[in-house]
Image (tube, rainbow, N blue to C red; front, side, top):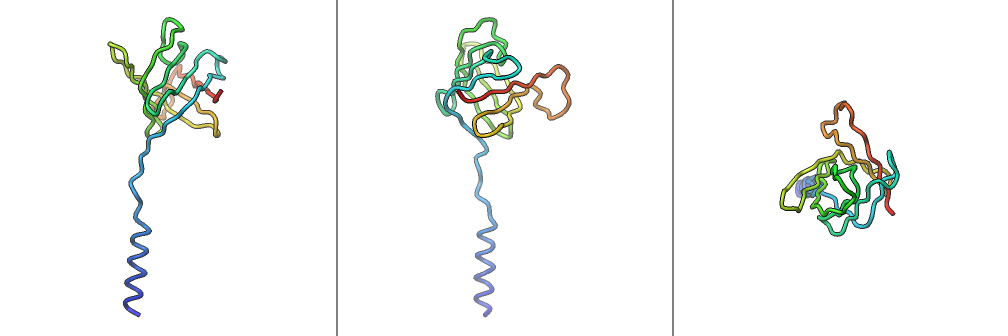
Length: 124
């Protein structure tokens, strides 16, 4: 009987241990801004760590030329890292909305931010 109790305790201990989780997320495909300005920005996730951004809403580009960025999503923050000769990093609060969309907010502190505008995207 004592052996069974030890075995059960051991099994419960093993089951209660959680494996380390990778908290990052990757995307594929094209996502189009739906709000506040429909079609103003397009995100084309071309690999598990690269995205091409067209439009000016996300990176304050002065033109509509597409630029490629590395990206990573962790702890509800998406970070875009410029791959150009002048590296720049931009972070947004990332919130999934359903199975085919998400929102981005430049206010990453989870506190009220003046003049922050949430951008909504859906998969094309």
